[in-house]
Length: 371
Length: 228
Image 1 (tube, chains in turn cyan, orange):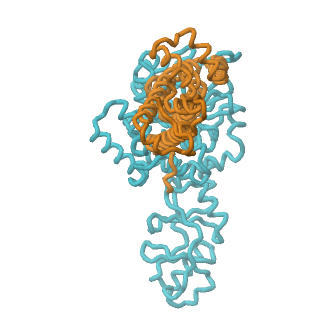
Image 2 (spheres, chains in turn brown, purple):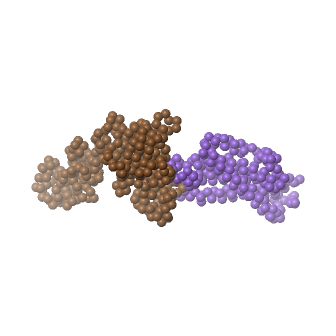
Image 3 (tube, one colour):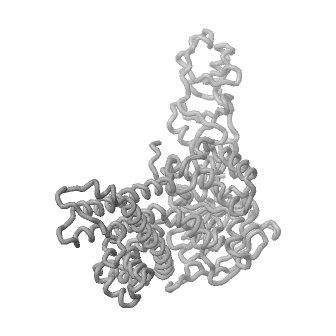
């Protein structure tokens, strides 16, 4: 990640400085930053660190005082600003949908500016509605008739409309409630998995920054770049005291939040098929030194039974209790840890589409973080 | 000359005999109003453009148009008439229009500026960020969004002007105001003529106000509650 070949650089900030009129100190001073093609870079830092100023200089909503900016090989300061902007998707916290235009018209904004023909625009709008998970019935409505979460989906669809290679996002999920935000974040990551855009994403929330980004740039007041690396590396090895302080406590937990369960070697655990005999059941329990047993029917996990319920009879006659929390392969190790400490059996059970994958215990999770 | 019958409180026969004249004066009333509004909108748009580009000038513009708004209409005629002259019908028309237009400017300018300034900052930034040029953004995004405020201003200005047109009767114009003045000028006051002038003037104002309200709704479907 750290060393990108020159041809693979999508956005390059070269010694960029911005001093606002009347400002005594520059908002951003001599900042150099490369963003590779297909990278998802999050800019994060305390207020006054110039993260939003940096973002807005890329599409020239704010003109830099000095320095050079390249987007997709072009000198961004040498092309007309409106042309540059039509090739860059832009999503902001206030969303900024046009209230007097329907959802369809809002999504079609940039294609209309680029004079696409009617049929092509209609086809693209229909495609985007599907991509961002809106209902086609919403297309004829006005923005005020949609919820905040729906409006932000439209905002994302509008930014993607002309299929720009670059997306700039300024705290895009900052105005929605935490539950919707979590869902939009996950959805957007899934979307990015398919689209592979080059994204620069500003946030003040370090958890969001490390969760969303493939690389995270931590900025200090005045646009000073303190560390620019993968979230894993930053959390494991903060470059200095400022970064360490900004990351806050629970760095171990934050690292766990970044890793999916699928990366960890799962154990089969104390489980037997319901067709097994009572002896086999006892043997498995002894082997794992537990007094409970998971029951499988083929690859389906039925639940668990207490050791005292085993009376030597047919396992099929028992009534297994379900595991209260079950994860899938995409769940994070942090969620797995939560499942472990809240379950009686002290394990996290992983099931993908009804198929039992295995289980994790505290030891397996701790190994991941200390390795 | 129009003859009066002294006895009746409201003389329907007089109305019947003067239908042509009533129609003519109604059209004159509409013409005086329409021209004042049209020119007023053009000037107010210019003033608004200046005020929006140079926010500091807004105070001056508001003060100046506010002053025009507070001068009594009779005084405006008295001030303008010597400058323009009232010898020909064209001169009288221009004198009348200058007075009428001056009353629209404060309301129209203020509402246009308020409407444009009311466009949410996020909408403006999104439009710029999507690649609208300044002029495109003003025409396609900001003006349509300012329309409810602008229409409200046009309605108030229109109703104001329709009332003021009656005063231009003093210049021999006046639209329906002619009947009011004529009714008052007779040796014995003729109520029928005054009532016709007042009632039609008020009805005209109400009718046009409602029409503009309807037009505004048609033009801004997004600002209406669609009950969803």
